[in-house]
Amino acid sequence: MPLTTYWLEHAWLDTNVEPGVALDVDSDGRIAAVRTGVDAPPPGAVTLRGLTVPGLANAHSHAFHRALRGTVQVGSGTFWTWREVMYNVAQRLDPDSYFALARAVYAEMALAGITAVGEFHYLHHAPGGTPYADPNAMGEALIAAAGEAGIRITLLDTAYLSAGFGAAPDRHQLRFSDGTADAWAERVSALKERDGVRVGAAIHSVRAVPADQLSTVARWAQDRQAPLHVHLSEQTAENDACLAAHGRTPTQLLADHGVLGARTTGVHNTHMTDADIALIGSTATGTCMCPTTERDLADGIGPAVALQRAGSPLSLGSDSHAVIDLLEEARAMELNERLRTRTRGHWTAAALLRAATADGHAALGRPDAGTLESGALADFTTIALDSVRTAGPVPRLGAETAVFAASAADVRHTVVGGRHVVRDGVHDSVPDVARALADSIAALRG
Image 1: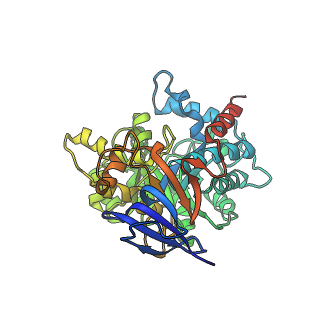
Image 2 (image 1 turned 90 degrees about the vertical axis):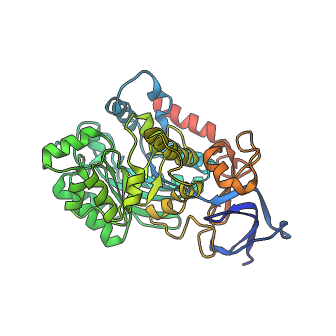
Image 3 (image 1 turned 60 degrees about the horizontal axis):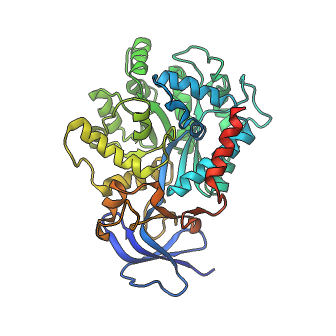
């Protein structure tokens, strides 16, 4: 079959912005060639005006949290009071309503330039904990939703067995639990990978998976060479409870049970000791920062600089979807660190873009995505350089403009596997994403 050629007015090629780049995409949806110095669109090429970067990877998502936006901003409270509101929304979802909501949420992600999502999925069973006829009905709903929205998904099927350090799940958490890690492994093993779909594992947290069952989840991921994610030290209360129960920090507990490693990503990694940071770095365990959620929930600012220096690759996620904007996540990671240290310039724009692209895709088990080079998946997004936010800087500063000025609203095009998913700001298969979001969220109000 003939190649499809995209002509990029400007492209970020990992270290610099190049004008006039042609990408040839083969029939398998991969980049066949990258040609620089192409001053004008070749005949028949698809023209993308603006700055094209590799597709953004949202390494941490809870799709149903999107229904909380605005609602949880009323009044004050803590992470724990926020969690009660979240539980109430979770109780109303079934496979059909979850599909409708997730399809809209993933379409919103596509509009924001996200081409792959890591869905940290623990909403497994019906309210009360009774399995659906298909025990993976909720996971399959998420997979189908991502397919219809046109983005790739790594379904991080999550073990969630306890209300806290061995306590039985409470009434809200019953639908999250498979009872034991062995039962979790049996259920998740029935999920099949397919085009655009990877199946990974997650440990919800050290409070939600008893210590003697952590290794079962880790072995499942190891046997399949699958990504393994875990909420880690998001709250000081979790650290205190873990020290009381086990005499060690959550990071040390995970290390003792074989959870840390290069295919593992700790989500948040906010409240860490120097020894924790050294453990994370020495095992090449990744760190997924979710700055807009961490600030929304008043969690704190994690030691991202120290973790990266220790050897932990950084990725980014929108987590609770207070906003869905990976450019804002990248910007916030740097700006949070500036506030904490009162110094500027902890990461270059290029380093922040790598966290949002190549390193994010690697955390999701997709090392063949996140770059504009021959052989990579043809997943990329184009950011306007002529909006009210981005107009003015010279194009060679496109990376700095994208990270420190642009927003999701400036995404013009999103291409996944060589196919246009978002064209001129309009989603190809969900033409009115706002209406789809409003309708699916309204349906959960009862």
